[in-house]
Length: 334
Image 1: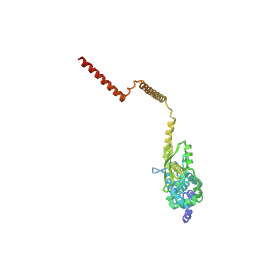
Image 2: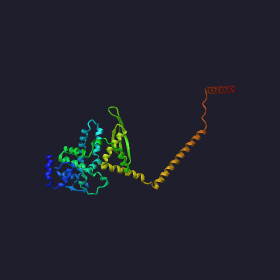
Image 3: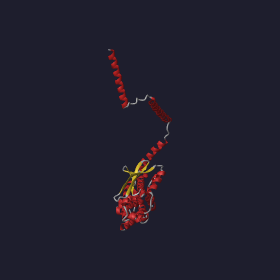
Image 4: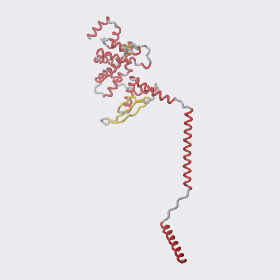
């Protein structure tokens, strides 16, 4: 309180008193080191450099993202005593999701302070949310963790966000992801990774989101719906934070559409027709050959019927008798 009174007395003598006043209206106190906040409001589109390095709010955005997760996790944990980890995670995600941060940046007036080239494209529609994260990073560097926590509790969760209402609001992340895929004409699949049981014997499910065949994120839950919701939520978060993932997805999509739209040449058609004809002729010839072999086998001379025991004895007696007669005639002639 005393520091704020002293800072207010000094305000008329400050060089950038308008920025100090505007920031006070947003965060509830006067900055100690204004340079952190000026950097937090500097969008990368202005292309400034200092000593060869880019001068923008991306690094502060990275820091603020981590601090914001920790602060909101701290607040949610202490606010909802006895709630399970899944509930706490979902509540935190709803508060720090980019749409919520965009809205906060708009409602607090932060977006009016952002310095940019003014040529922001549609894919950069999260500029306000990014600046809000960078602002949290600036507060952390300027005043520390507790100042960030007070800012979120007193200025955000008390005045702008009803934490209980947000916690119990159902958000269908799967529908949002499907809507995104349809808008961008991207194929989407939910692949079952495994089914198992937890320590109490309750069945659990794990599903993976695939966009154009690219593995994105997997989610676990006690039902297929719950696991697909978590996988969709994590995938949406990755899509917002990893431009490389979007590039991979659209590269895969480009390859798929190219293969689908590529016409078959006349030469390829001729080869396909010729191969098909040769295959049919070969099959016909083989069938005819098999048919001929079968017919020849049917009309060939049958093998001799094997002799019975009685026939063999009769034949032997006949041979013996015939031999005896011949011998007697010779002896008589002699």
